[in-house]
Length: 339
Image (tube, rainbow, N blue to C red):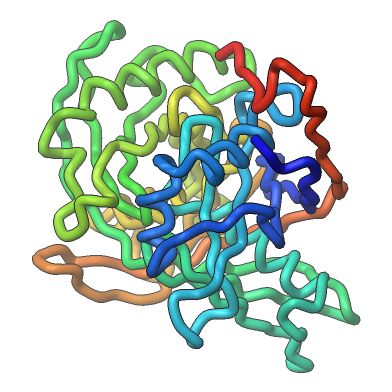
């Protein structure tokens, strides 16, 4: 790692970190954001920068962030390459929310005087919008408009160490396996975090080599990215569906937020199964009690699949900025993790 300093701006969305690198100090080659992601893991400079900022001692096993890139064309404000401790992801809703807040707060995108500003972002799975709401010059919330999302498979039987379970497979920019936490004898609470991570990793591993991990049109998006374990909490006083989830993604990372792209895939599965009725919202809580409000805001088709356009509403907050340094004598560059 030849870079000596790296500047970042740090946000969290619902408790989940998002480390923004506005001006990556290494070239990130590619013809599009999707192509950049495809190349990044094989590029020692780009992957080394990811490791430097994500691994200990500058990061931790649950760190998440993104490198800003040029957009695919003039229709977007910028692109982003998402990363975590194990590599580069195709989608990240909590990151898109954070980027929307950052773009307006920093002036990268000028706030619309109407109080609603669309920040259009190219991500590896497509083009998304962070619809940023402001009042009196301050950001008050963001509606993340995701890519078309759909149910890939329902009631897939999986034999786990906690018994056989039925799993739904949903796409929301990445592919997620979804199951009731109660079906594996758990509930979504901080005290069960270790067990939730273990079964999340197991389900992902069991499905990884199956047909259910295949994206129907773009092999670059194939692979079970995460496992969503959820508690069903009935309906709210307003008649909305209420659930709490723990999303275990990559290799055992536990999302502190309700997971933006995972929420999109969850909305798609619920809508396809008839559990989320027209006009009804999903109130989606995380393991730490943070909340997204999710809704179907459009319908479309993707190949042979009936798809929905999910909108996930949340908020991100800046908690710092950093200038990370590299001492050329440091034997632990780019870093390490213990999980």
